[in-house]
Image 1 (cartoon, rainbow, N blue to C red):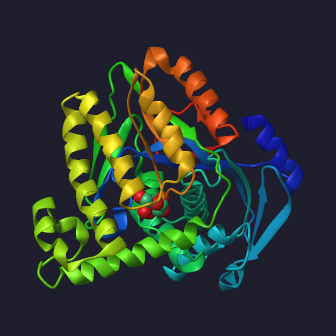
Image 2: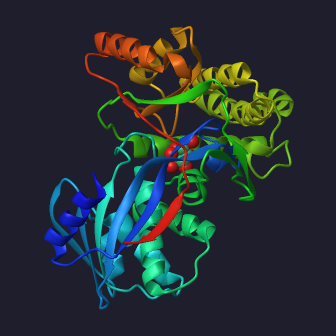
Length: 385
Ligand code: GLA
């Protein structure tokens, strides 16, 4: 949606002009999947696909929200923020307001128009973008100085404790802390982070959505979290570790006998994926994009065979990408079960790649994949209109 269009929509919804634009980013994750809640390192980057909030401070005790493509206005009262957990639309926002208030921040009434360009249910973290952008708007209107990492943590709390999804910190952190043309190497056990230039030479990342209809990702996600917790408890009998990410591949092989069935498979994925993150960052820094691509493929195979979060659609989409001569690697990103893949593709070959993979995917699955034009941008932006 163009900015002028959004401004018109704001005026139609609220009868006045928007005065501010707050945005937070959706994200990709180069590598390090399903390890953030195991204390691992992840390597996400913020996108040009974002949650844009056109906003006006009104004072008082009501937050009014309107949404692109959805009729009507949702209202939440700032003196009763616990009451909106059941909202289908607006619960993330209410959760953020609730936990900001719990931190002692005064929540001031405002009108917010949401133009979210992160496709929903795509594995590109639309929910984190919505939470972080909302947190920025509310803090700006409260007139308090805020720390972006704190906003990410409060946003995660809203998702965990208000919306009931037991996610890790990766998405909210990337959404808040992303930096143009860089990926963020984030240690999820300490929140120490560093920016690494995402320079792929003559290659680029192509983001594709398999468009699988939504299918209870949240409950399957929460089951995975329980499985890795079970694994950790068993392994702690012989290893002095506080999280799975601390276990080296060698230690894991020696202690694996303590685990069985799916719990063993899940833990093996986590340990090996953490190892791959280190290797991938080394490869990227050395400009070895071939090795980076190989590691992306390995990550996908592990998510498919050990963590079992891919499915026919994501396997087909990344498999077709891998068959392309100008593609160095491809994998699913995010929680899985649907959503997006990233592929490393030669810049000059992108058009043909999209055409061939798109056609073959449709022939095989029966509906289309979507390909997005993406760039790596800053996480949060704040602008006076
Ligand atoms: C979702 C969660 C993240 C992370 C990924 C998997 O995006 O929100 O915290 O666990 O899945 O890597």
